[in-house]
Length: 113
Image 1 (cartoon, one colour):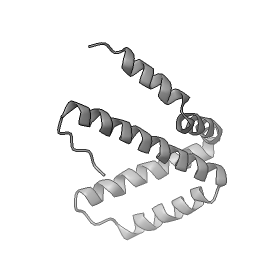
Image 2 (cartoon, helix red, strand yellow):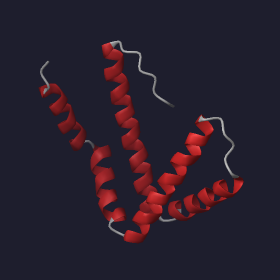
Image 3 (cartoon, one colour):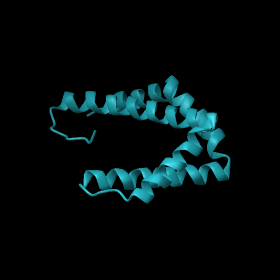
């Protein structure tokens, strides 16, 4: 199999508005050590809470309250809000691409979400 098409796709992704916006905002936001630490904590908590739901476990109300407070703090900062929304848009684009490629192969890959 020739991989040149995959490399061209990777280059096109890097030229996309979603990619450029995300990486521009990432450089800005993650350059601030305090914000970077808060975002890492936010992501860690988000994954933990989502894993609990997927496992059928009840989330601790105290943890939910901490996550809500941290979310509010982060999304109150316009640059962080823009960054996290840009990240979600890029993730959605990548999920769409993966779905297209997966469907083309006929593989039955079950993705969450």
